[in-house]
Figure 1 (spheres, rainbow, N blue to C red):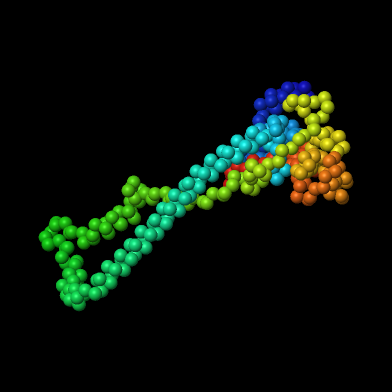
Figure 2: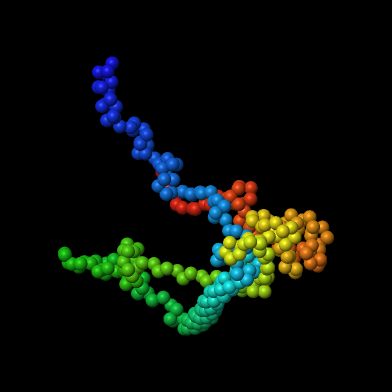
Length: 310
């Protein structure tokens, strides 16, 4: 038995894995092999560390300085959103100039085309009004068509027969058979410039955004916190705001948790802090990324890439 074990151990040590377990065992790529090769859609779960905390700028990803709120409920630093709108205004101005130039060229082309068509009609009318003798067909033309193949036939043995095709016909034949030549390659069509919007879009909602649509917001800082590590609290309940739904009243400037808004403010349409009446349009729901739990928001990030077909 010991002799059999000593003889079997070297064989077992040198024996490779089964061919069926190798990645190249099949004639096609499996789903796992495609994923490992980098093809297809990749998904990853986003944790709490990847979520933007409350009170941070959506553009600068830092604590908002002089924060403002857009109608869509996103918080920005005043300087960051102003720079964004200014850059978009300059971009729209260039797009508008290009669009107006294209419209002017289009109008000029239509005028030229209409003028050419009018001139063609005039020339056709003049030709129709010419003498009947010029309209009469020349009898020699029929004779030339009938004797065409004889006119270009070789008169002697070894003589090269002349080609009856015109220069334009030869050019068309060459273009059909030798399309790879530089003079026959098609040129790119001029792209149509779309009419630009009147106002720059919001960075996230993509709706038109104006400077006067941005409302300043005052956030109450939690005691004991400051600077970049500052936390904010609800002005009604005093609870810390982390990833809960929050409501901002634009006419009073009060920030409160949505629970406090539903229970204390919404039934009477009165701000519980200032006692001032407000309308439904004054309440803005602040956008929050939520936590890493699936029930609080989108926690799956996807990256789209090319698919590999077997």
